[in-house]
Amino acid sequence: MRTLLLRSLFARPVTIGAPLPDKPSLEDSVLAELGRALEVKAKRLYGRSITIREVDAGSCNGCELEIHALNNAVYDVERFGIKFAASPRHADVLLVTGPVTHNMKTALERTYAATPEPKWVVAVGDCAAGCGVFANSYATVGELAKVVPVDLVIKGCPPRPIDLLKGLITLMDRTTAKAEI
Image (cartoon, rainbow, N blue to C red; front, side):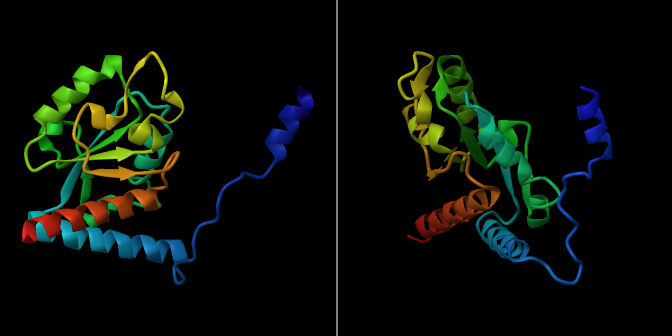
């Protein structure tokens, strides 16, 4: 025990070094490009930014960690006009994670009903798309599409924050295409 304690006291921290201010990484430039594209599409479609309500319908919290990463200092999607709301009454997009459990079915239906039109539902992760490892569980109702209509599925276990942004851009493209028809 003493050896472990001493080793941890004198070990260097395991962190990522700060990026150089004059040379952004490839991932930073991809993020900036995706964020700006999403901001432009949202403003064209809505005339304002989009607001997201995240709903956990019974997941393992892996997808939530990636969704919350969108707000951290690395991704900081609020600079692109993407905001998260605590109430579905203020939301444009519902990001739903996990297979729908029996305990969350009614809450999810009420959340969907409380979200004003136009609204979109995005199934985030393999569990929301097709129940994943919880497919034959006695505790689940099933995939998200069995409870509320789904507009977009973002696959992954869990999907990366960049994939979430790409999915939101795809959603905006589909919506813009439907509006022009």
